Image 1 (cartoon, rainbow, N blue to C red):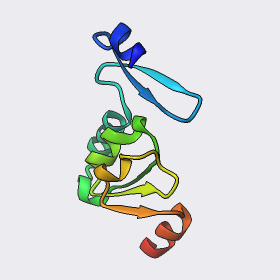
Image 2 (image 1 turned 90 degrees about the vertical axis):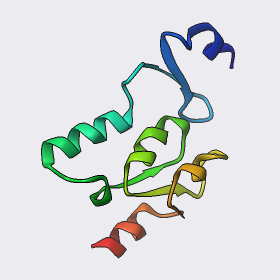
Image 3 (image 1 turned 180 degrees about the vertical axis):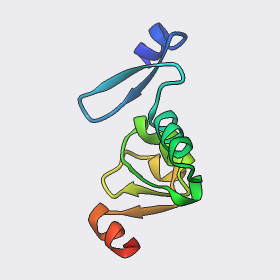
Length: 96
């Protein structure tokens, strides 16, 4: 909250681990990157799958048609996901 109050008008401040704080330029986030990939590859959000565990994953998780909160995710991340998992590999094997 301290950093958000100081810098929140200039950048997005989110945690990305127990010891990390990300200072991200506005409109730059994993969701924007995924959206660019989707445009380049002509795919829809329904064709995308994302996995996340931290607050810097929110935009990407909201954009992907199928999203997974990891079992060790910080509280609240699963609110933005369609599923929970403890194994990315297992979910990819199910898909493939």
